[in-house]
Length: 421
Image 1 (cartoon, rainbow, N blue to C red):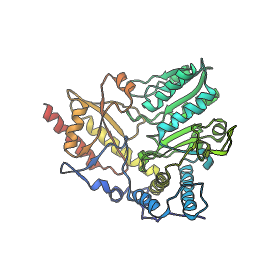
Image 2 (cartoon, rainbow, N blue to C red; image 1 turned 45 degrees about the vertical axis):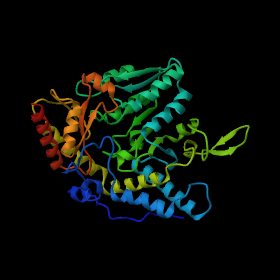
Image 3 (cartoon, rainbow, N blue to C red; image 1 turned 60 degrees about the vertical axis):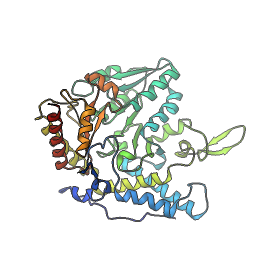
Image 4 (tube, one colour; image 1 turned 135 degrees about the vertical axis):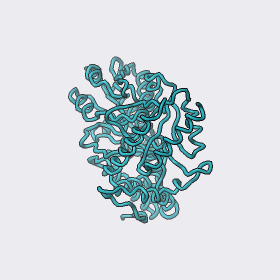
């Protein structure tokens, strides 16, 4: 049986014209006003808004198709299962994984990394071993490895960054050694926008037989992802940053690795046979999906992927690059503004500080103008420590943002400066 959700008209990919006005019309919240001003939403690195197709998909699942998956012979259960597994196949295609069984649904990137740490890590990393991360990691790619080190006696090693926010690749080469058991690295920094040379990192690690985990929370919404071409061993991303629902995410893992890993949690659906003497675990990917999953959210994530595929991820990346270039050029002409993170290869994130103005004050005043940005350490405290700042202002762009919104941001910054002058 094959069930499909009702289809809404979607933007059509056009390599010569990015129709941002048409795209914006698909996002109801962008018509909101904040303090009487049109909403300018530039906090997309934290979470993105949802197109009408995704909102409608969630509603349709609950109104017409909802039941538990994999367990029932009745029609609604079969419908839900068909849609749920269809979403898994959409994820597989989106990142070009070889098999749908390599796609594990989780709550988000954070849970995916914890899953790898507590399954692959506990089984393969011990006292005296080393785990290699970088100095630009989100806390979600630091704390799980610290916890694993405390449990096993392993050591966490950190690749430094320079003042541009780029990895010291010579240091990376030096830190790779016979004790390194895993490299876990962010693809695109949420605090700096830096896009790491992930292909080189994977190649160097694999030459030594070291597996690589990639945090793709920021990269997946902004650029084409091909896990087959990358040859990464694990890749994780979150639905809510990809114009999908919160509470759903993806862990990709190579089949051989996932098969060898013990389960993460015990309970329903991750079992094949249970007695009081022993349990036989289910096949992939269900071995890692204990309990009732986020059914409607997974299905709606599939709808979000449909939406992005229709636009084209290359077109999305090009549009956001134009916005970032324009925003950076304008920011450089504002006295007292310092850009934090000037890597040659950057995603759509502009982090900065203003002289004599705390980032939280900048964020509060911009909000009065209807402009939503993020002010803080962005769950990357070591990055802030490295640059000697308590926090930054972060404007992060998405496919629905415009040059006019960049102008609104820059005009707002000028007003903030005038207030504090």
